[in-house]
Image 1 (cartoon, rainbow, N blue to C red):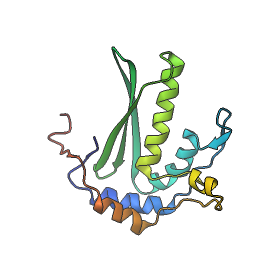
Image 2 (image 1 turned 60 degrees about the vertical axis):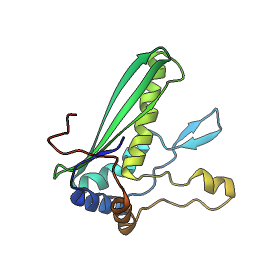
Image 3 (image 1 turned 45 degrees about the vertical axis):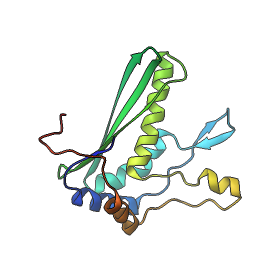
Image 4 (image 1 turned 90 degrees about the horizontal axis):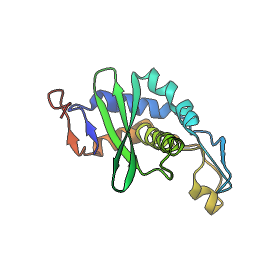
Length: 167
């Protein structure tokens, strides 16, 4: 469930400016199983760290796991913070392919990559749709107006105030 601070004006403006400066994440890792290339976690960070920081934004990601009768589930919470104290937070979960330290670690890295891409608005330099359709690769850039419009249209599932942040 997405949680946000009560006010979103500062974080929306800052993220809009940051996204206008972001370029697509470089697909510099190979997936031999699918014979494809992908943007790894470091590439996503490289694409967004500078523009986020320059606009008073930071990202905190934490990992946890639960274990029940169906096995281990890995959770990664990602929080986008603005220097004003405004924030956006969400959690994504997955069952690792293997219930081993390597399987859990791989799941955490996978979730961190997708959650960071999602919350910052980073896309790879070209997407699978362009590759499949034969269209030329395009660098993804989010315009400031587009990002601002997305935030104005967003309806958070749960509004969190400082008084309810721990609940």
